[in-house]
Structures are given as C-alpha cells and as structure tokens.
Image (tube, rainbow, N blue to C red; front, side, top):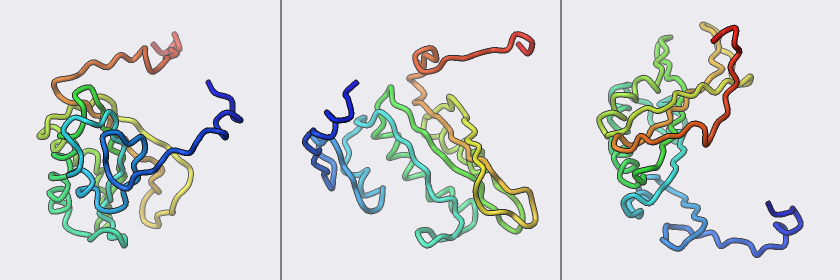
Amino acid sequence: MKQLPDLLLQTPQTIEPCFRIDARLVVFQGDVSDCLEQLPDETIQLIITSPPYNLGKEYENRRDIADYLKTQVPLLKQLYRVLKKEGSLCWQVGNFVEEGEVYPLDIFYYPLFKKQGFKLRNRIIWRFGHGLHASKRLSGRVYHINHLKERSRLEFILRSFYSFRCNPASA
C-alpha cells in the first residue's frame, strides 16, 4: 500500500466527460440513459446505483407506482447489457409512500430484475440513525441494497470477500 505522501505527489488523473475505453476516470453529467448508450456491451464490472424513489423531488416526476416501475425497465435493460458476465449490480432503494401506504421498492423491483436475467444474490439492510421523522407511522431508518448477478454467472465465493463469526449458542 502506498504511503500518503506518495499519493499526494502523484500526477492527478484526467477526468473525462464521456466514456472512452482507455479512460481511467469518467464523470458524466446528465441523464444516465445517455451515458449508458456510449458504453459497449459487457464493459462494467460493478454498478452501484440509487434510482429516484418516485417521491416527486425536483429531479423526478411523481407518478402511479406501476407507471414509475415501467419507466425503470429500459434502464435495467441497459444496465444488464453493459454489465460484464461476472459483474454485479447493487441497487439501493428505500420506500415509496402514497396515501399513508408504504411500498417497499426493492420488493417491487424484484420481478423486473428477474425478467432482465438478474438473480438476487444478497439483500443487504443498511440501517442508519438519521432522516426525517414520520408523523403517522414509524420512521424508516433503513435502505435495502439488492446485490444482483447475471443469471448465467452465479459464482460468488463468500470466503474471498467476507469473514463470518457464528455464536455457537445460536447456530
């Protein structure tokens, strides 16, 4: 591992505004669909994303939950196309709330993932202690991250990435 002073003395990397096969760093500003169109098939090893939750924020138009999910299908097709066979997609979402009813978006996305050819490998619960307080229900303090792999490539060796400790009394 390099020492901090060595890292500080390195020549800064060039940041490219659009995809180039030889680029080390690309920062694309704009619609993700436009960015994905530039990418060749099977070029990305890891995709980590958090799509809009259909809450009506300034960068999205709130719509019926079924319509919202339909708008995500073209994006999922493009993500599947650019993901390498051994690659992973980590899709982080929260909840959509309408008229007091909570819609767990990760569950609603699951059939869309399956239809594109992804398999759910891990469902990660990200617990946090901040955020807005709800006035008519318990305040949500979790996000769900769906770790997906392509259907034909399910090699995932846990020992390479994780170490587990098991309490013998609960095993």
